[in-house]
Image 1 (cartoon, rainbow, N blue to C red):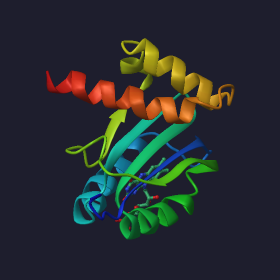
Image 2: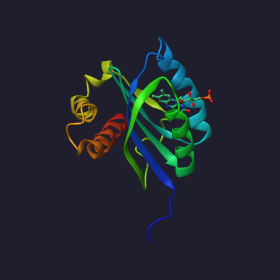
Image 3: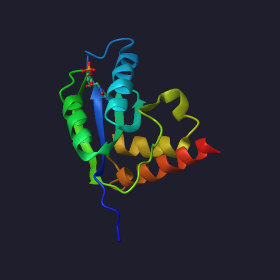
Image 4: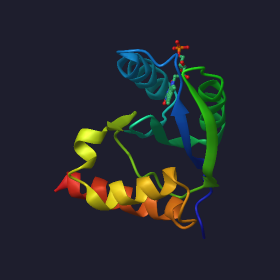
Length: 143
Ligand SMILES: Cc1cc2nc3c(=O)[nH]c(=O)nc-3n(C[C@H](O)[C@H](O)[C@H](O)COP(=O)(O)O)c2cc1C
């Protein structure tokens, strides 16, 4: 029998605005670490130039709450939800909010290619593919 779970994931892309000042990422991450720990949310924030791609995972109620807060944040705009679905397991078990920036993406060519396709909205399958690649990425970290 399938285990009942309220585990949920949201993947979205957005673009930073003028309000995204210097040191803004550190501020975001510091509130993310606190709030996400309190609400048992895990995930990753990828920054590619002016674009963000974020995966949030956790109990559905907590994900919906935190995402509604994030959606109101004026430091980014054009928020487009790519995945919004129930799931049996988390991709990121331990990361309250990991971050990948351009500098480290160049070492992860497959992830970079998929992210670029999502940003440019070229490949419809990329949204699903990015989860698979992120899974590979986390398993490579465990080795
Ligand atoms: C791209 C982006 C990603 C964010 N990710 C998170 C997050 O994962 N968790 C979080 O609590 N806040 C995140 N924030 C910040 C929220 O929008 C909001 O500012 C914050 O939750 C307020 O926290 P506070 O009430 O503790 O000050 C993000 C903001 C942006 C622009």
